[in-house]
Image (cartoon, rainbow, N blue to C red):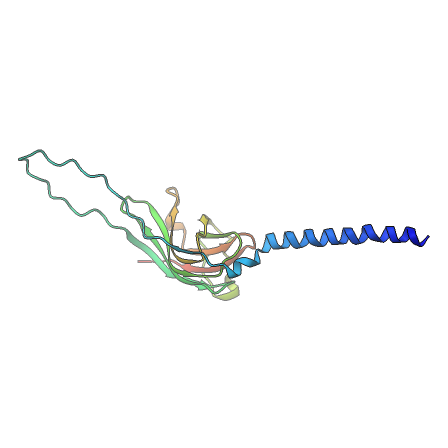
Length: 188
């Protein structure tokens, strides 16, 4: 009789061990704790639009005065403040020479994390924990995954976005619905 009980306990122990290993694997996948010690630095220059070279005028024809090509122009900017993680840097909304727009992060310094994104939002920027959950309540446009948690980088704003609707930028953790940091955009 004791022999039968021994066999009943063994499958239970094996089942518990399998469940624990599976739970640990899922937890590691979900939280990705190693990212807290991995920094990804990105150093992108502000994009410039290359205009095609014009055909030179025929010999002897008067040359038209060439005006300098339009330069990128900052429309709004702001300083990042910390929310869930210590975050600093500058955010700029820039109109490029061709009329397209980018959100530029300069000197970004934040923690790495799972599923970080750059959001253009209509939410107010609040200090500390008061700013944790405000960016998923209103209108927002995801500009893509965060390229790196340090450095300077650019994010293209889709052409159909009405920029007058959006007043802030957030470094957003989509997995846990929390802002790592955000900046209020002040028109320049």
